[in-house]
Image 1 (cartoon, rainbow, N blue to C red):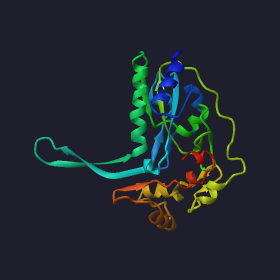
Image 2 (cartoon, rainbow, N blue to C red):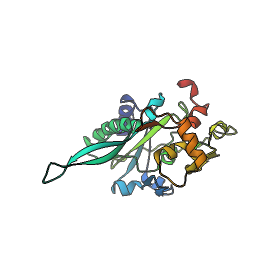
Image 3 (spheres, one colour):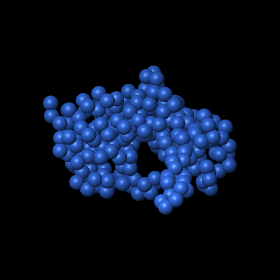
Image 4 (cartoon, helix red, strand yellow):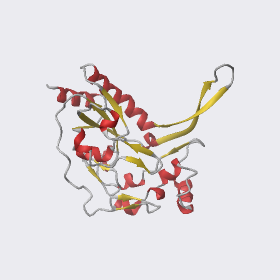
Length: 249
């Protein structure tokens, strides 16, 4: 087998359910830059200047516990020159911790073959996954895959290896279905668009955000599970409503 086939086999062996490949130039027209006040998206070249291939990896999230986020953990840091300690806030999303650990295995696989590689969450993952042939972007704005619907989390590996690229995904699974749009309790969704300041996950991530209205905050406090005062489970109502792949749970 060639390098592309070996890489895909390795990805499936370590637990990814989807792997697709494209060239960085195919992603140039996708949105980049600041996304609300949450994060910033980069081009592959900004992440790895000599990148030749972009590998998108999908992991099946079969249990809602994967969507837990733990905020405001404190990591003690020793103050130089004394015994004082400072506290550094941190947060963790379980599915990203799983994805990063598995993606490191793909990075190591490529590095051992002489190719500079790195994992990243900072390229536009959902739209890149469409370019890699993994699925379509649905009316809930999430990636809809053939087997598992939207119940897949994504991470990318950038590499200087020249891998065989996959064809972009062409089909629209949503068609006339609007179950995710109708299910959203805050009416954050319209077909293929999201009003992010009406999303309960955005509200939970940004407790002090001034662009979240009172009715959204009230629903978020009522409907978003909180295992502790420092953690919550991201809303998956639009995922749960999607009929694609639902029988796989």
